[in-house]
Image 1: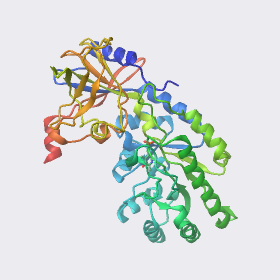
Image 2 (image 1 turned 90 degrees about the horizontal axis):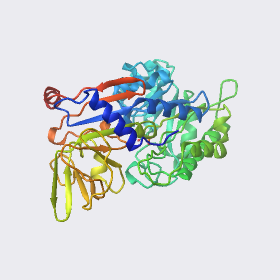
Image 3 (image 1 turned 90 degrees about the vertical axis):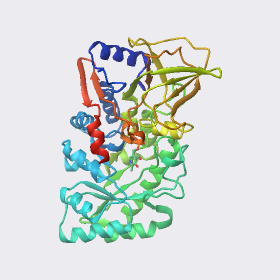
Image 4 (image 1 turned 135 degrees about the horizontal axis):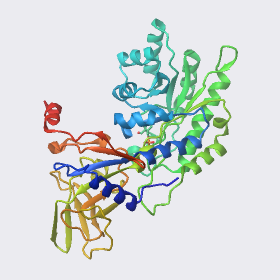
Length: 428
Ligand SMILES: Cc1ncc(COP(=O)(O)O)c(C=O)c1O
């Protein structure tokens, strides 16, 4: 499948959006989703894992209800990092058996709610297991329940999204606490799943495979020493987390999902033999490449041999890019006021500045681009994941409207442009 949308594809969609009068007077930027691309990506993922795998798509990557509703009929589930994300999933029609609830800070009340509904729950620590046991003694549940382990396979290229180093705030390290963890599986007859997540973006193939193998070795060890009912294994679910990286850079060498799936088949064949019910929690790889953002260029300034183009999205939408530009990248293209792709290279380097009130609000510094004029469109590629879902309220910017489109159907509003009244309600 295509890895990313091309600038030509985005420009064509932008031209259609202009012809169809999607842009209103107040719209300075719009966020777009190619829903065909998104659907194809799900089919691609499903094709590379056993048919009964539950692909619980990480809601934190993109929690828009209309996107969750687009994904649900495709047979995927939803991974929730918080009770509110799980609630969104429920509201969007995800069945209890499709919700994987992973919050590391679940309250007793939240656990009771989740157990009552029968969501898949991944506990983070021993105290949470005790809490669950206490609740289950009073009211039994259909929930499958796992424990998150840290396989300690080292950090990926981005420290803040790596969670399998020596220290991680998530889960329990299986090398250090292995005996206690196995004892917990012996003590709690309802503990029937295991959960591992190595990190997000920046993790190499070998690292992801090592982390999965270590957790799988551990599950096998538990199953050798803990048996249930008619000699059934204790661990029946294996949740391998997310972390499949998305492509942002046109020339960055990267591994594909075929490589990942083939690596898993080679290194962890047990996961493909039907002995475990597999769960994935991909977020970024599902969403990042189907989304893109078009902003009008408001001004272009020229001094010191450089040009600065001021646009209408910055650290509000692209928080990671602006605060940690060395770790996060978005490719940019330029279209004229009619949406036609501009080519060539201006001889002055461009800095692309957002609208927020601090000097780090830059989505690119000193890059080569075609000549930009006020009234053009700046296209920010691959904004489908961890962008809108991390929207920053700094300087009270209004969230742009979000539109989805499919090949044979018209543009569909996925989220209305925020109004000043919405903003007032937020701060009040
Ligand atoms: C437990 C867990 N699962 C899944 C994900 C999704 O990761 P990604 O979007 O990189 O696939 C995350 C990301 O933070 C996570 O913490």
